[in-house]
Image 1 (cartoon, helix red, strand yellow):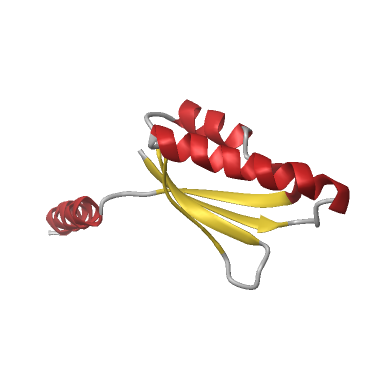
Image 2 (image 1 turned 90 degrees about the vertical axis):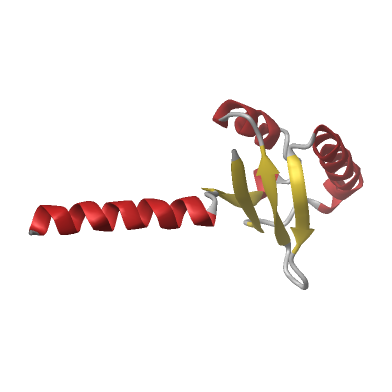
Length: 104
């Protein structure tokens, strides 16, 4: 299951926390890249925030990964489930065909 995760800073982290949070973020990324849960990750240029693509086996695993996100307490996080485009287009075609059958 793939998810787009977007994080925007809600409030600045306390300056005294930066020496702990930055290494914690590096470790969190390394751990989840290593496990394959983080497929891609980035920061926004000139803006405090970033995003990534996570590939996990379940919503529970997603929750487990995100519960350890070091910047979580200072961020607004949005998570979007991703679907294969071809499958989505096939589903749309099927739905449209059913609607046409029902109409006439």
